[in-house]
Image (cartoon, rainbow, N blue to C red; front, side, top):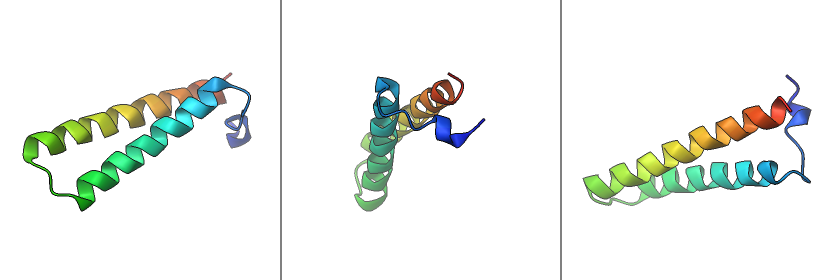
Length: 65
């Protein structure tokens, strides 16, 4: 698998992958820097993990297409 296959700016999956991975980083940063309640923190972490998993799946699809 070549990493150069991931860079496909004309493919909408590429941009969706970038946005999801960026959102995961931002959600992780918010959870780390802020001190929300336990429930809010768990919800944010679950969204971050879901975004990371979906971003990894899209990366796999781009690399194997």
